[in-house]
Picture: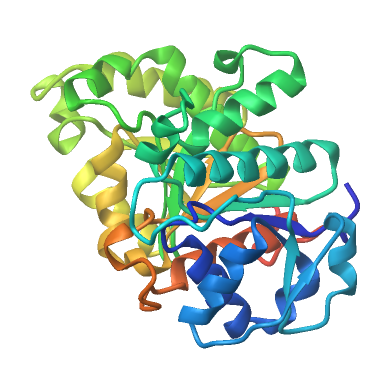
Length: 347
């Protein structure tokens, strides 16, 4: 895709805080107007602007290519998704769920055609998706299905992983929203090999780093203590690390989970592969959820999102913090650039 292609920002659920955050971001970052395109409904964005500081210029575009001509401080809106009526703030709405999913679909299809260089998704509401009759748990599964179909694959043939990161730490999860007992069952040699491959490709092929130092956390206390506290490290993780190193990747571990994130934060590693959801997300969120970014690894395009949901309880009050969405947009802009700010030298 051309380096000048904008990034797409989906409006999220119209009853939640997503549209408010979008308007706040463009107030805070006016120079981003020509580098982004918001996919959503004009009336939704106008209502959001009204509760986040009043009048805000919005330019209606015919498509992503028109974003290059939008002046600073103007919201670049591609009004390809419309709602018959504005949903009530903070209420589950089937229409809002359908519109939010439609915006994601349009963004993904534009990315797959090369019309946008990355996708940033404002929060969806899973109950609204279900009310709309959509059989998808959330963004990740929807994007995975769309990309796989585009590539002529079944969704399971396009493995994706969640990376949560902020300015201090990056963690990638082997498994996400499953019970802990199930997460342990999912820790298989094939799944761990797949996770390490997805991480390696993201940093070296998408971000164009010369190398990435990947640390692998253990599953058990003290990384198993040589088998005293469990054999998953000896039977699954150690062999997977060895296979990755045999491919020339800078992968090491397993490290005790209670210290590996601290070591990564101090700069010893670039990313930590965590064995299950809370193991990886607690340290990132403890360091500051307001700047957290969720990046989906494994898609054929860059996708980021803020580290929070629709926050129905405060929607419409204009008090939601846009920092996480702002960080997600910044991460997408950097990842979509021909040369990233974090490109690493070889050696």
